Image 1: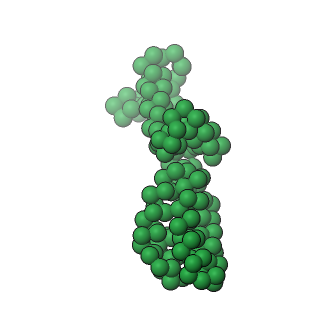
Image 2: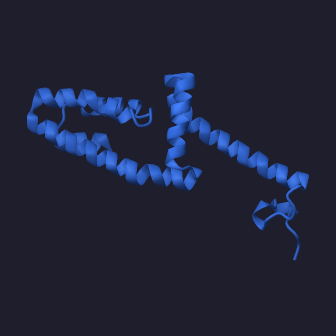
Image 3: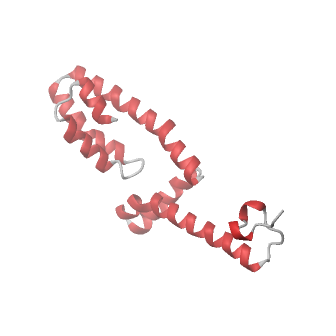
Length: 145
């Protein structure tokens, strides 16, 4: 989205700056701030009006990504609360440094899926949780009507 915005406002090196933004956006929360820095410098050197246009494009893209795209992906796909994501990023950053920050959310998502499947499997085979809800039955285990 930044590439399209950069092209619309006429920012020099739009493709290069958009690629840098894509690479740095891997880091949640801090990545977009790092991503905008080279573009800000180029816009500042080029023209104050271009700097203003760049700030507007960046704010619009961040609002779209932060308010619409990310919540849809995280909320519907992973069912993860934003505070949980922030906590996971902080803890993994403290434990593993920058690599922990980069891999925190994908690692948490994988771990959550594995634990959820293992818990469902354990409930099914152990019988400790009583009658299973209809959604926990495997296709071959469903009662015949």
